[in-house]
Image (cartoon, rainbow, N blue to C red; front, side, top):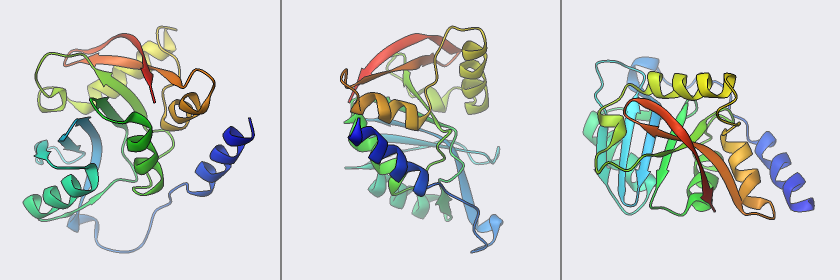
Length: 177
């Protein structure tokens, strides 16, 4: 219990806020990302910016390569969705929250396996919308980054998240830390 309170206190202390540094046109605003082992896909708010998939040792290196590829710094503070597959879930989410300063409302989901990258085929806005709709209808529980990390620190060391296909919400699955 003490661990959980300490973790939540630290998470609240690191909440992001807007910064006046830089021009918005020089940044790419990350809307969603998928981590599938060493394959990381970034999807952006800007419609003209197509999703980009990078193969790298870790998300930090993938972000660095993606920034060089698109010629803009990637801003992660407004990210709405992270899809996790074939990675250390706890380590990845801890890094995202504390180093990349992801929004505490960022939703966590697991992609339904189909051998393809969902973010390259589906609109991230539709994916997040389908999770919100599932929650409103009682089909899915809270799956924000704080709730999921708290589940990893609980006795069960797991959390329930939405499972998504390129068509949106398709169920709920349990993921382990």
